[in-house]
Image (tube, rainbow, N blue to C red; front, side, top):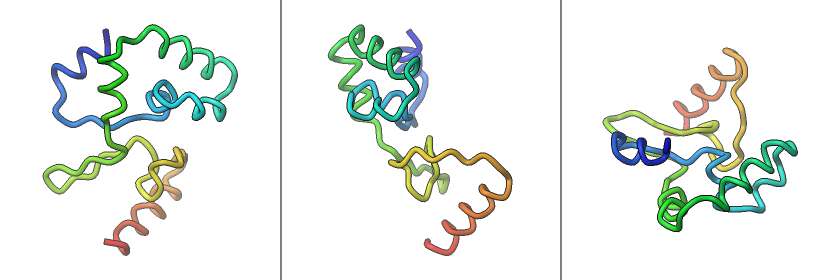
Length: 99
């Protein structure tokens, strides 16, 4: 139901790590057991259309000079967490210098 709402109301969407694991089972090996089992169960209960939609989502979206990403913008496919103000400042500083 949540996926259908997002498809209806959002014009910018990026894939998250749990979404990615649902459509790429090998990615779930990095999760704890509960998260892995949840991703696998959910993927088995999704329609082909829902799987295609999730698979089509990008890791990064840029719109109106804004950068959207679920993970660290430096390495979106590594699913790194930004856990502190210091880490966020380092990431944004690196992005600024790599533009």
